[in-house]
Image (cartoon, rainbow, N blue to C red; front, side, top):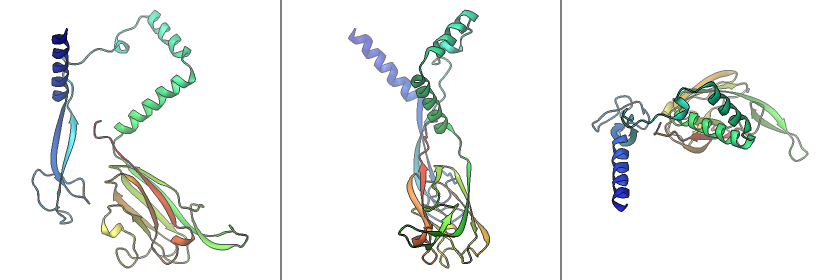
Length: 235
């Protein structure tokens, strides 16, 4: 019996090792699309490339695949039995299945371009019984929460409807210098009644925030959160 268990464990380990491999390459913090097998500098920005290793699942060979019961031809009687089983499941069981399916879809979803339109407008608030001037974005304070997944490309259109310039700084994010949003330092201010496009790749994950870097606009409403979801590499 012990010998059989040992053989099974040995075969399982072998199959697991055969099904996975790793890939190592050099890439750029600012330009993750750069892949090279040698160290050096980024051809786009000149930054030093860093080494990255990822896990890759190999396709399972035909010999290792097993046929699922759901993929086998079913008679009309079996189909009716399966439908009855599905109908007998309670809402909790169905919800758990739906949540699992959605989670799987999120992990396997390809990178995409995610667009937000932010309308910056003057407003008046009254939190203490005395009206005060403030700035609202899309009619709210704080600004809207921006959600991305690692690997996406952010397209954020800022529609400045103020009578003064503005700009947005993405606090803690790795972005191209010209997208950093600090007026007169990394970017010219967004002129009144004009639109500016911030476009940059999402190459990290975590919770961050963004805010105006012009005058005291941050203090009177121009601040918000950013949620950068982690993308599963095993997909």
